[in-house]
Every structure is written in C-alpha cells, then in structure tokens.
Amino acid sequence: MAADRITIIGSGRMGQGLGRALAGAGYGVTLVGRRQRTVPSQLLLHVGDWPPVTRSCDVLLLATPDDVVEAVARRLTDENGVGSDQVVLHLSGLLDHRALDSLRPSGAALGSFHPLKSVAEPGGAKATDFAMAAVGIEGDDRAVAAAETMARRLEMIPIRLPPGSKPAYHAAAVLVSNYTVALVHMAERIVHEAGLRDERGMFQRLLEGTVANMASMAPHEALTGPIRRGDAHTVEAHLASLSPGDQAVYRALGLEALRMAEADGLSPDVAERLQAALTTGDGSSRS
Image 1: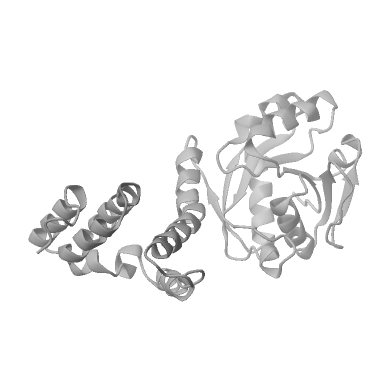
Image 2: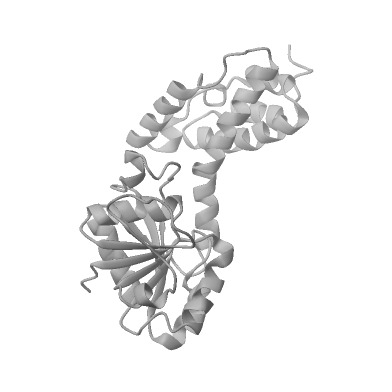
C-alpha cells in the first residue's frame, strides 16, 4: 500500500521524534495535540475535532501512553474517525493490536509499531535518526505490511512479534534501555556514598566502550570483569561494601553474568566458588 499521509495522535517526545523522521522520509505528517504548541517546522499540528485529520490519512499512529490507547480507540470509534481503507497502529511496547479492538467494526487494519529507540529530546538530531533501530511489529496482515513498508522507508529493522510475546519483549527492552539508566544512576549514588564528589559522568566512557564491544561481538564474548576472570574474592569484597538493597541487585546481575561466563568456558570449580559468593557470601569471610 502506498501510504504517504500519516497522522499521529500524541505530540509528545516519541510523536514528535518519529514524526520528524517520517517527514524526512517523504511522508506528510500531521500531529494531533490537545493544545497549541510549537512543533518542528516539518510537521503540521492539529488541535480540535479528530475526524478531519484522522480520516484523511493512510496510516494513523497512536503515540499515547499505554493506559489511554484503548480509550483513544473508543473515541475514534464513537466519532467515526477511521475508515476501512486505513491502517491504525499504536506505539505501545506492551500492548498488542487487540487494544484497538473497538475499531474492528470500522474495517481498518489494526496493529502495533514499537520502535526500539529512546527519544529523550525530540528537538535533537538524534531523536530523528531511526536508521538501523529495530521495531517490533504485529497485527492484521494489512497492518503488518504497512508497518514494514514504513520501517523500510525509515531504514529500520522490522521484527515480527509472535502472538503473546509483547510483555516479555517489552520487559527485555526496558531492561536494556531504562534499567541501564537506572544502573548508572545507582553506580553514581554508590560512589557518592563512598566519598566521591565528582561522580557525575565518570562512567560515560566505560559505558560507551561496553556498547561498542556489544556491537561487534556476542554478549558472552563482551563480558569482562571479576566474574569472567573467576575472582570470587573481589565479588565478596564488592558485596561487603554494599547495602542490602544494592547487594540484591548485584547478586541478581552477577548470577546472570556467571551463566554467561560458564557458557564461555569458565571452569566448574571457579564457577562454584562464584556461585557461593553470590548466593551466600557478604564479604565477611573474605581472606
């Protein structure tokens, strides 16, 4: 399907970032917002009744919080805002196309399009660069076809999601993106509590190097540090320096790293010592 007109309900960070990327790929893009605001010059902003812009597009994207997707779909149904020749895709990572089931009587093709892309500053250049980012896609056949066409025009990598997989898929994405941010914040807090005062940004190059390694090798090959080296004493010392809450995070991640190290050839006896340190040790018995 030749879909050159896109309307996006939701003018927040993802709506604006994806909208600018789509405009750069040759689409005509209209944002639907609740109030007048400044938006990038490549985009049109519509404030008011929905049907004039939601019925005039080829693809309608719902860039709203997860908990209002179904309500938006119901409003579109009540206002006759979608026709049978259109495709409706929401951007939720958790929900699948069934969140749009109230639109089923319209005859529109329903699906979801979830970019594995973090958009923190919609006005920045990085916010519009979706090239080589994966995007989770699922839904009706016609919706999937339109979503894959859109992904290719954005130079993204479309990933077809099997039925029922979205909660686990989204949890994995949150671990990689959101919880990496949380881990860096946690690390900066730990060194601050240990007496450092210029901790902000101190892990930036370390993180960049890790990401660069991951781009060229499998995770188990990119793993470094005391668990990969088999240094149980170091692990015990780390645990001894942490609060019980921080120990719990360290132990959980350490056990995952241990499984990776074992898969990469760590000897069974060393793995056993590390297992004991991570599950029962607190550093108090370190020699």
